[in-house]
Image 1 (cartoon, rainbow, N blue to C red):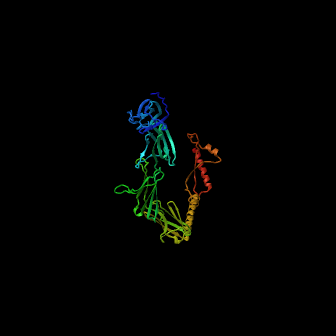
Image 2: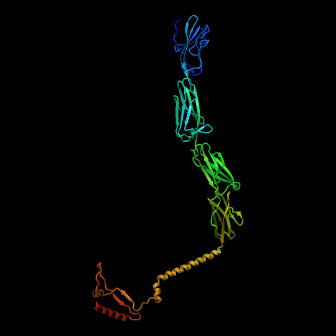
Length: 511
């Protein structure tokens, strides 16, 4: 054999595990008729074929076959098949020639990625959801040889694709803090083999659920002339729609509430005939949502009550004046329709120049303008609800203006008499001394004693003659007093003077 030409790697081939590949020995356009074809792997013969005899020598691997045209067919590729392959041909004249050379690389995967999302709550439909506001962890793993690229891709409802994260290796982790409804959509883990460019996608739909924040709202409306009541329960603001249930919770023998209506909707209505309603009956709307915590539920309810109008049963007015009758009805559930009725005519009173109707919350007023004697009589405040009809009767008494004038005059006369008596009493009390003297009640007995202090122009002389009592403990002096006898009212002034002087003379020696 002549010398072998040097190996030249002219092409790279990529095969995937489990598949097959065909490596040509020479160009199909070349006019070559070899006698023997040899295929070498990494310099070691792996397979050969003698074209002249048609006999193929045993191969090192059963999945390596040299074809009639000299090509090498490899079936069921394995990673151990990687290497450098060279085709060598020997002609009939023993000329050895190097033909094609290849670098064979084997790729495996990527296999379908495995997605794990936490925390995740499964649904009966096979889907799953996370609660709004929670922190969600996305984990993806995949196997690929020799290497791969992993990416998290989010597809929203637009649909638009957003790459959230990417990296090499067998695993990729991504976290979403405080997840919101805008993050609801499809999350895809994309794995691509760097060598074969084969790409694998695994997608998981992520639902973001949240219950309404507030309690359900209960309301009612009356239709068909108070014969039917429509109870409505509304619970909005959550996703998806909640389950609402109307229950009759009036105590029964079984002590269990009776379900009257149920449905998955934000609003649920319940229509009942008045024959099914009773005073004190409890109707409850219970709201449940899949995103609520276990055992948590919210509700609203009604306790049905019959109407009970209240007010004063009597009213009075003067002819020609205006009078207002008042009635309050705040008990009825559902609210009653309250109107004023003239009992004598048994007809509802309407707004007019004579009657003015007003309503302020639970207070209903009837104002009668320019009252006459014909307006006297019974008026009824009638409240009607599906639970029954109740009335408050108010009797209006109308008095004529003449009677009123007599009453006013009588009142004024009474006030005048009382005032005169008070005045005379005060005057008599303040002038009682003069009144008593004038009537002779001021005379004293003939021998009444009077004690008076001595004060005269001869004070100095008298002071020397009158002895002083011992001083008091506080050092002050004490003056002697003189006792006079007041004569009877029949004596003259001279006798009084003589008698006073005689008493004074008798007193001086004793002193």
